[in-house]
Image (tube, rainbow, N blue to C red; front, side, top):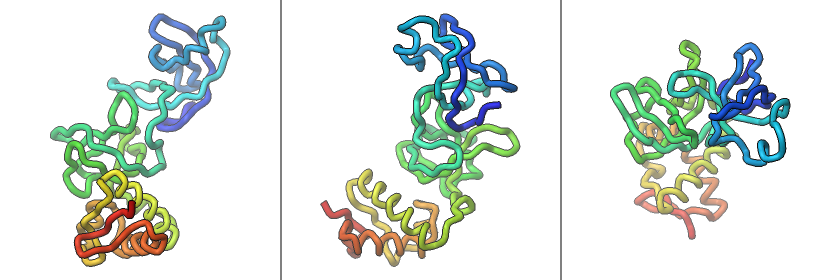
Length: 213
């Protein structure tokens, strides 16, 4: 049985015109489309019997499919992902694979907007067993407040680098605004800001925080 939303090392059992089939054990044979097959794997003789590390997710028909691409996050990890598009059911986030990652309305802190980035947790839905994202990350953050603030300091640093070095949220900003933007408490946010300031990576002003060039 393969692990959905994670990397698996699987044996190649069949070669077809449109790719390779991998042995998924109890899950049956899993297709690795031609576009993801490494050229060196098929250049020197038959690849049958060889093993290959692939990421397993679900295609448009909700069938298991393999890829050699590496997504921005796997199940159980946090990441900043950009909203690629939305519909009446939720948002779809670009996580580096052909099929975007779904984030339903119930898992959003605020309605996601195309082109904006959001801090999310990648998970497998317990009921449908589909891969999805949630912006309600607090229930998955099991570290102590101090450890969480250190981790978030790096998240905040990445955010600043990707948003022209500025964030308008400061010490006096409402906790609701901080939670909506970053999915953390105001206490964690302030500790992370303090950590970056002590490391002389940011300036704190009345208009928010600014990355030091």
